[in-house]
Picture (spheres, rainbow, N blue to C red):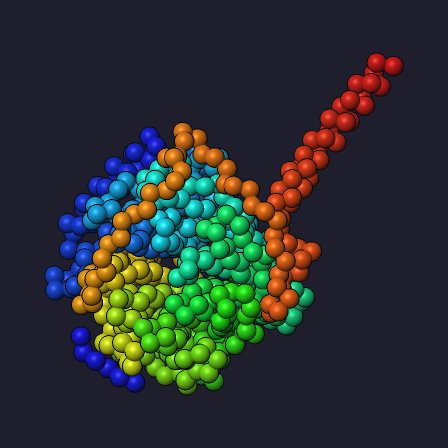
Length: 504
């Protein structure tokens, strides 16, 4: 590349999906000289739209995809999540992970990650209310029964935008946005705009630390991400000045750093720019330990980058050469990044390769000192956005995204999800054998997730601890149940009183 510096239902769904895969593989959706495979559509027989995919790879190099679809059951038209696994180069039948949860429930906005001991970790928004976590052994992941019961992560405010990462020591790092009772402000006139919350687990997701508020924002937050690097640092970054539920008044993008594995946190840095508002921040750490952040300018016509060695001092913003952002504001669009075996960073963005060019998904490669020429990933069809990337065995790029009929807001139009891959000239890692779990295969019916111990106390030196009065604990489930049963108890009491009165 040129260098530039600066179940039965599940069975039916699976058969239809495999047919779509075959058709997608046969269709010439990409130019013949493209290094990327022909895009395969992620869809089911019941789906009217498919969007917001996420993707990860395991130590064997297998690919794991999760995406949001409009409907998984004929009885209830609720959005849900589909899971699809590539094993030894072949695709297993997809299935709805959450069909067993009961009627009328929904699951959206998922993030998925793998660890070194052979588990999948999933976090998502349940019933448009709160963030939950689940896990499954990869060796058993061909069945929806393999997943643990949902574990609630968020409190009782409106929650959205979850993300999860696995550190090199196996620690799980989870983040999301949630309204936290903030006071009204000029940018948040109704109050209660969302803040950024963080929790971690050091035992594979069985127990989680208490939530910590990283932002304490007066203007709201959106699209948070978390990254754990090889140096023990944890990076959390988001959009400042927007809120999924209340308002959208962009201010810039923000960044918080922990240098001790998530125990304590820096005060957030807010990146602003004189010519517009930075949005859609994505951050990666290259093979030299450099922190590289990119973001787009709104309004504006550029994608910019900044570099830091310590997460405290940053270079001045510079344009990423050869790429222009999408023309629309793309409120829910997002970027992603992954590192290969050489330590090169591969950013995927929705954009254009000329000021008047057509929209597509592009790969931007950072080699430690500069940028290579942008490479188109998706075909020029529709308006593709929200790319996600994972690297398999150090030298294979796997990318998922969705495309729309028209630019702008997604809902109310046809949305389709896609997957494509390509090899890159980087050393390959040796596939690691998949660990065999000590537990038995999944039973015919799913079993509850192990009950965690009470939340630990937030360390006194942690920045911005969450208000303990609003912490969610296991006892809250009992409280919620009692409150839910209270009207029934009152009604029974009235019936008994009337019955006794009639007997007298």
